[in-house]
Image (cartoon, rainbow, N blue to C red; front, side):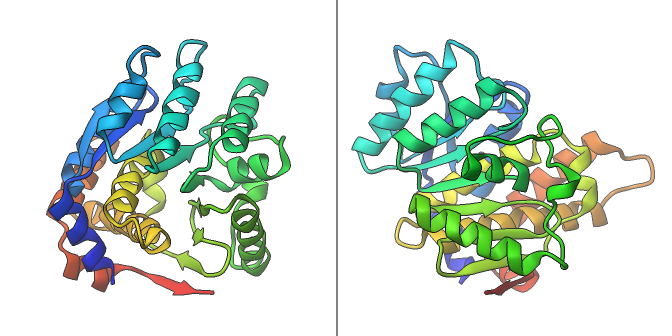
Length: 273
């Protein structure tokens, strides 16, 4: 199943408009190229409608939002929605400040997103309208564990139903649901948390996956999560004794570039609940 999804990305080469944060913008562009997509980065208010019009999908990441880019996010999202494009929201750090929380909640309430992807603290913040995070990282007390898995699955399913969107929660255990079916995914390495931007990269790649597979958004989102986690595993296996987190970042991108559909199907670790 996932091999077909990856094949569609590489066959269709989806053009993805990214309004993303400047900490990771280069890595997002590179992983989009690696998976088979094509990136455009544009956040100026005067051109975002035009840019998003020529693309197939829109990735909005609020990681380094400011008073110039916030209006651009709304304008691009509403244009993309009018064109029936796939739109993803990555509410980075929602709960860390009032501005981030309000922006994310307002975006979610004014735009119909195809996918909302974040860590569990960010997703809880959006579901409740307020909350706290540890900077841009999930609060340890929120973490999805084997002990609270059933409760967590029920929570994200209800949120997906309420927002009529696929909800993707990433962490040690990943959850991807459309409200009916939930992929519980266990790919990845804890060392991925030592790299700034693996989540941002995933959001860009996920937007390409759902844009290239518009009739299978749930499966496409889950496939991208498995692919990213599997790339982390492959990259870690290729690390040398002198390598550090900078090399690890590059090896993850290389693993996505070289990943085959057969490799993804064989390496994906998930169950459906």
